[in-house]
Amino acid sequence: MSDIVVSAEAREQRGKNEARRLRARGRIPAIVYAPGKENVAVSVSPRELAAVFKTGAAENTLVDLEFEGTKRKVILKDYQVHPVRSEFLHADFYEVALDKPIQVKVHVELVGVPVGVKTHGGLLEFVTRELLVSCLPLDIPKKFSIDITALEIGGEVRVSAVPAPDKVKIMTDGDLLVAHVVAKHAEEAAAATDAPAAAEPEVAKKGKAPAEGDAAAGKDAKKK
Image (cartoon, rainbow, N blue to C red; front, side, top):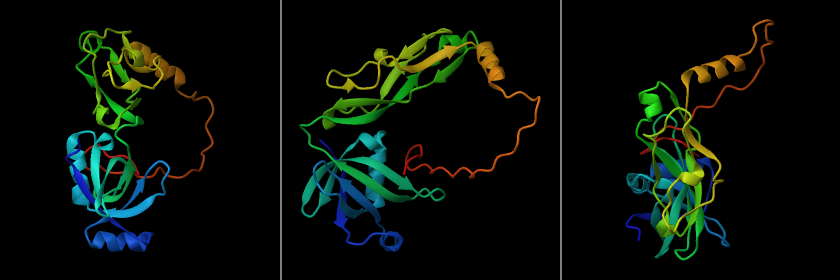
């Protein structure tokens, strides 16, 4: 069972002004989603939220959300951090039933250095970094660890070869490539083939500048 508790308080107002008032009180806005129920607007403590990230698998960690005298089993579905100060700005929780399977994404971890890279100068390409799984909330794995030390040049690992616990069903297509080792010269040749020809100058195109990514918050940053 979960040993992480996050206290939630109901909030009536929304918007930027309300968010600023909450942060001035040391809290942040959040939403609780539940199948078949209306979404509930709440506020939580960012310090309590930070405890979820100490598990190493924040999005898939079961949390006890204390709200109006009861505890709800939830997982952290999404979160947003400040792009500069690395402070929590918002969180989304998803309420779960312990006896009903849910679908979540689990990170893939590659372990070791392939012999094709270490000995033969190949390049490792990490293609699929998350797998969609179906299982009960208490059976969600923190990650999938794959030993790739034996991979030669041309060697590969597909989803069908990823070991999963008995109570966990991988929903991602089994033929999907997870990682493989390619020859360096082949990679360079492909890059040269894809490079645009320099025979005629290209017309400059206008476009929006890329937005800044979210900073890290207890782990690699991402997310909303």
